[in-house]
Image (cartoon, rainbow, N blue to C red):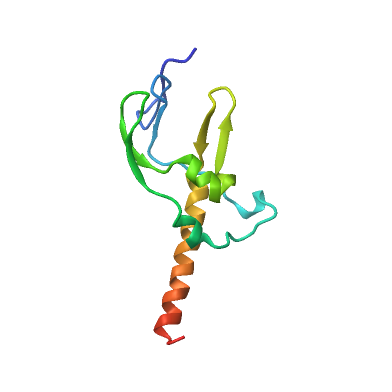
Length: 119
């Protein structure tokens, strides 16, 4: 049973009792060569507008945090949410949400351009 994990430097640290993982940089595999069936997220702005950003206290560890609610995201981007059958809890892939945010910004940019050009 692991109680704490440190590498030779303190730049990577995991504390299983709180679920806290710290690192200087975290990279997710995102190369196009590792993906199939690539499709743009459609109606991203309307999907984003159904989500709220929240501050809250985490029950485990009583730590303050901020973020999204997985159940809200699941309604508009189910690919970003995973269910843990052992705990009964949902987790959220924030990288997936970032893709939707980028597409929402692109949709807004298109609207602004159309307004500026008098359309």
